[in-house]
Length: 91
Image (tube, rainbow, N blue to C red; front, side, top):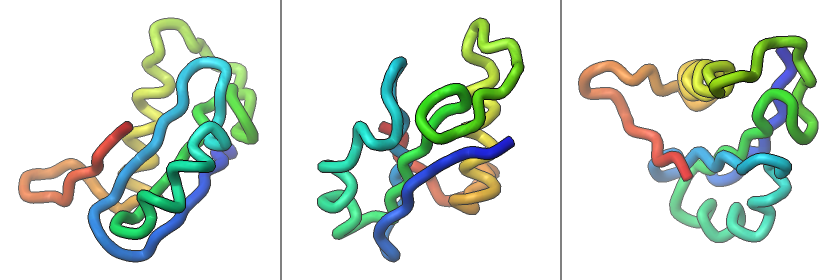
């Protein structure tokens, strides 16, 4: 699935910015530059929002977004959630 995200900053702990309903990664446009001074910042468009794919999946209950965010942390940020793994701050 095609997932759009914005990335900024090249050092420090990772921060994942997740928008609310009816919004997109663009919602964070003023916060990203400030956070990127001391963090690796990722702002993701959830499936069905913004520039991400409008996938034909069951969006009920939000499980699809939980799975999307877990995969994003593993595949894009590089954090697997195992013991001793780097933590991601989710906002």
